[in-house]
Length: 155
Image 1 (spheres, rainbow, N blue to C red):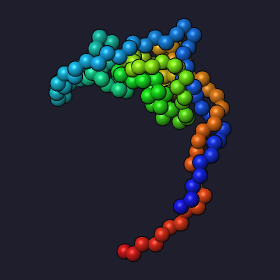
Image 2: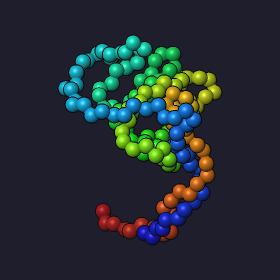
Image 3: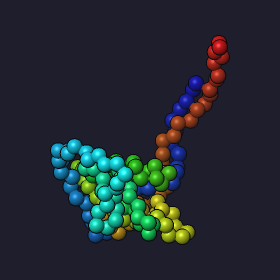
Image 4: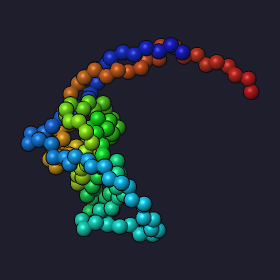
């Protein structure tokens, strides 16, 4: 098999600080408590969202009204950019300039008719957390397969 890499202009996002600044809490490492195991019940907080264990990296809880809350503990901005890249189906480059790990919680509507739940999350992250996803065209490294041959194998 022969392959090569090349840069291609693609739709990308840059994760940047929105006007008004980032509204994130610095993560504080805490010893993990033994998980409470309960069957058949789900603990809800005062707002009606599920309560997740400590150090949940990317946990989503939804209410019957169509609101969803994303809770994250201990992520770097590079990890946020990478995870959102999967959701947006595009590369997301971290341009925040923030070092360290952060905790955050954001509520977005996932049930609005005609709206994209991922774009609702993007809008909520900007207004509630000060994280802006700027849409641009930019170079992305891709892997190009030049030649692939099937090698016969005996049964």
